[in-house]
Length: 466
Image 1: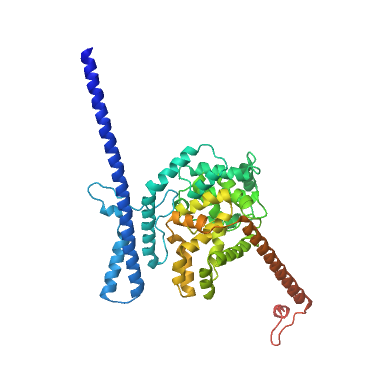
Image 2: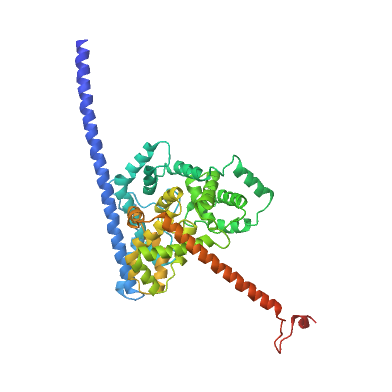
């Protein structure tokens, strides 16, 4: 017994020592992983600056034919083909840029213009850099907070958490709760299946337009471009069900992108359908997706007023060059930035939007312009400005900076002011539409009262037939 006690004491001491060694090794491994992530992020930043320098040289040299220009073309070609995985050595994995993200979107945008392919690579490196730097400092604590939250209930804490963004593993659960909060008074058991059955029994007038738009939905997402994917069929059913749910709208271009985002996150058809209903019928103002798009047009005028108030230098600059920002921003609001922002930032916008409503759209629209204000102010030609505005939202990679501008720098942002501006602009827009209708009616009445006159030398249709 004494011998066993001595042996047991010795073994316990050994286990204690091994445990201490294991903890020290685990801590050291964690520190090395963080250091590795930091070095990878710095490597991405250095490469991004190198590519940006090449791009500046490319723009400066233009189409000049020389040895320097040829060398520059070779460097750019090599840079576009290089991947971080090529540099892996001694078994160290450097986490290369993935082709697709968690939701199936292309990580490196597939620009049609050859000159923008370098810009796409720069964007991907910057996104990777921000992701690596934020992973330990921001994302892990955020995931832990969401995991510890338990049952969801409206609160100031939930509002702040949603603004910071929902982690991927918790997003489907959170979105289902947010959607249910919006549509619980509209939901009835079996409603979605009932609408699908109605669609099978009778073809909806909007079915043809829906079919055309299916192939245009997110060409940069593998779930909507792969021939074997089930997502296009799911999207078709969701849109057809909605066209029967809301006959006053039926279908409007843009609804396909809203439903597609809901499908990518929620995966289930019925959940995506109710998410679309929540956005169109409870979050957005009435007539946002009507034939006249009255509320959508009014919101663009509201945005112009807010831009003049919050960013006067920018508005003076674009006004001087006669640039109409609504050509760009109209689609932002109609599809809730679905075509504009990179996916991780886009979904953070939706996290807050589904809870707080349309005020979030104005906050982020202002923040996007503030984020890129200095770049726009440097452009001195209207064509250059329009070309830059076509893709500049995709250059935004720092989600924390954008969020800080939207929810801090843009304050004060009272809802009362937004409602007043909406009322004023909607009344003006409706008065303009009535005036146009009156002019149209007067014109048709004048045409109807006049006898058709055949110009001299021309034959009438009747004479031609004779």
